Picture (cartoon, rainbow, N blue to C red):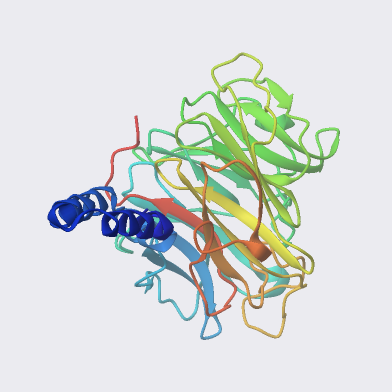
Length: 371
């Protein structure tokens, strides 16, 4: 960028030369100025607009939970589900960008049945897979969907109301338990590592842990307590980082070596923070691991007068979160990012209607996972 004072100084010096040399000096000055002129800076929203990515998310509209998809900058939201008698939640996009698995609620109150579904990223070829399922997540090959069986048939909105861990094979349709499923209890919000070796999840009041984040061997019985506070962990697609909710007002990002036999989380390199009464949850990575999205809004316990909703902490699936919207930040910055004072170079709001926008899930439509 040109320094205005420097240009003025160049101009003033040219005016002090003898008249014979003035045109030549002026010409040289103009060439120099033109040569060092920086292009207009691209804003963060414009950077997102140029990406080939989409974001799926849940939103409560017209007394109904629906799954929407929008561009990476929040433009052109499209309702993929449009089902007035069913409630869709918790979209999760396959790494190859072809499918979205999600949850569907039917019924009311304790008689609700929550089921696992899958569809194409354009909303076509919708198919039910399993009843009494919670928090699905994709395997790195996009051919397997992990999910957490509901603890008991009677519905409970608590996110940790789970027992065991199962895998659904999208090719054969078969469901098989994790090798250590009998010992997995009260997990929620799992994420599968790119190398296929590990599944990370939150545990609450189960497996001898009051509350924590566990690393679970995907095809074995090893369990490692990562000893980081918080919940809802998410591995980066490049397999080098983990993001999680370190508290109601913080998303944390740190390195992790998932190729190690005993992976451990390194020092937090990025902390995204907000102030009470605002909460920040549901972090997710862009397919290139360069950006993060999340949901944020005021604390609350839901509005059970709304059909298909429940009363509990508003970050839980099925609980209406008034005035919650989605946001995005660059993932490559360091230190603390205070959202209350962040500029549009570091933070953009992707949705604005406040209709309980939660659970963002990035994907590149029909895109090859990053190498």
